[in-house]
Image (cartoon, rainbow, N blue to C red; front, side, top):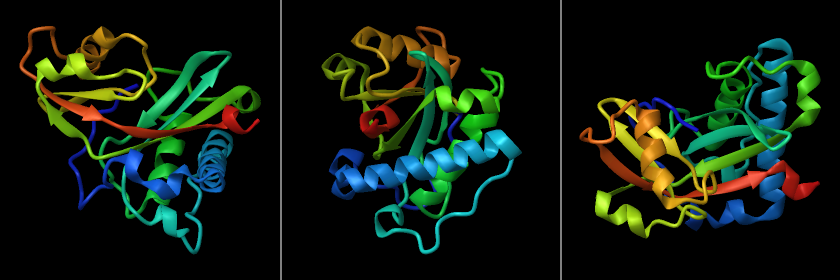
Amino acid sequence: MFLIAPAAIGSPLPPACDHWQLTDPPAQRYVLALARRAFDAYARTRTVIDPPSPVPAFLRRRSGVFISTMRWGAPRTCMGTLYPTQPNLAEEIIENAAASAGRDRRFKPVKVPELSQLNLIVSVVGTPRPISEREVVALDPARDGLAVKYGDRYGIVLSGETPYRANLLAWGHIRAGAGPNAPVELFQIRDLRFMESQFK
């Protein structure tokens, strides 16, 4: 999962694991429903839905978000932002859901018959923390992700994407377009991850 991420605008969320409001199951269901509505609308009609009005309080903060889908246990799409680009989390979710549905150049655009076969995942990203390469060995891939910055490109490996710590650095380099010995900046990522399959 990766993105060429833009620079941060304003102040992002504190680490996502500390954003307690989004750990509430009704809030998680709301987030997933919003992402699904935006994803399906773009897949069906190539339209970006309007944000909810009013925006719920727990979606008024700003944060990066990744929207990914799995089909039969394999990745189907993933697009997102490491840093916030929209006025609030609701609009960040909507924009990235639309991007995931039809703008991920690694995959063919999602077709309408596929929609019911997809398990949608929302990852709300906390503030990236700069780390050294020596600190990577202390990361837990089940809990920690890694962002590798090479020039203006980022290679993102989200938590839970791999069970192997060594893959964090290797995959991050590849996704950033960096060779194994290229000079890079490293950032630890924590995210809150919601899956539709949790509520089925």
